[in-house]
Length: 301
Image (cartoon, rainbow, N blue to C red; front, side, top):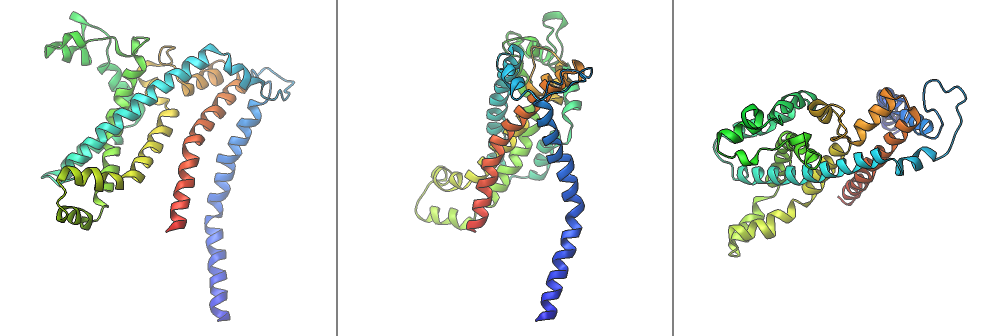
């Protein structure tokens, strides 16, 4: 018994030293950087020329509340998030529902739907910049040209140039890219439901519509929650897609783009760090409750 116990202790020590480098890297480059950013956000370091750096408390955060551009970027982000999440959920779920029965060529369809996810946001942004060309009429290009050719010219618009619809247009490429990922998650959720539940419902005389409504869909609640969390945190820190399509335009400004400009273009490090912490808190509000839910579920099982 003593020999077995020594082997267990030795195995635990070996495992600890195996993960120790990763623990150190995470401590320094994740939590250490978060602490450093938080510290900068509480100072008066408004430029690299400031020598007498002092802590000013939450002054930078208070000033953000009255910053018109910050509120504009936050409003844009909320518009983008709402359209992106609803559009991706609906399109991904419908595609999963169509493939759930196991149609012929399912593997091909899955590959086609998942392919956009393999493309980086910045590369996709360059392509969609052309597709969302704002020119209309004789100079139309991209989607406007396609609409014109198929007799739907009345649907042409200025896309991301329009102050009122810019962020809704920005959500289109994001929906196109992430719908396949949502499809994969929901399809895995469908396939994870035991066939016994379906057969039992059929024996009880339930129609296919009722089987989906009362048996299958309720089983997808964990998958639905996972999808919401993933899409939510992706949308809140969106940066490369916006820059790839419209650059650093005021019309399509979001928090991450504004933070970049404040930090690196204007070199107001304290204010940029404050915006970064705000983004972090927004993501944490979404992710932390989900992680707690997952941990509780694992403990129950």
